[in-house]
Image 1: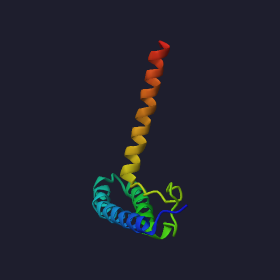
Image 2: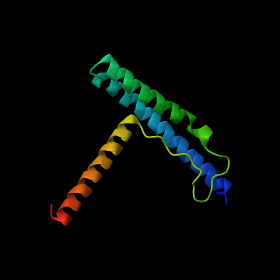
Image 3: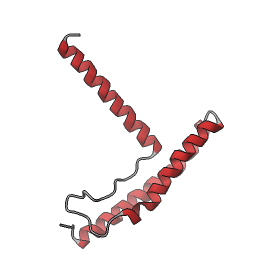
Image 4: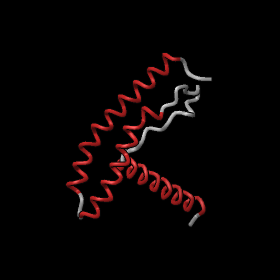
Amino acid sequence: MAISSKDYDLLVSNMRTTRNEKLGKSDIELLKAIEDASSYANWNTSKSAWVTYRTLLRDLPASIPDAVDDDYGNLPEMPLSPTETAADTAAKASQVKQKAAAAALIDGD
């Protein structure tokens, strides 16, 4: 079953607002990436990730289906910036290390 048209309009509006905010933030983060690049190759790799991210953000409204399921299961995910992706990856790696350390304590290693 799909969400109501009122909820759909609000959802799309909120997604557009978030997308626009993320595009604005990406302008600043992209400039930081230029400043932080240690080489042209490093910048080129970073630039590619930012171009992909910004394209996904721009295309987001067109990828929202005309009918969104009640559980929002068919709703596209909001893309993560290269900075957010790096932070997410680091957080997940930290969780894995913490779990391994906890398991070692429990096992008595």
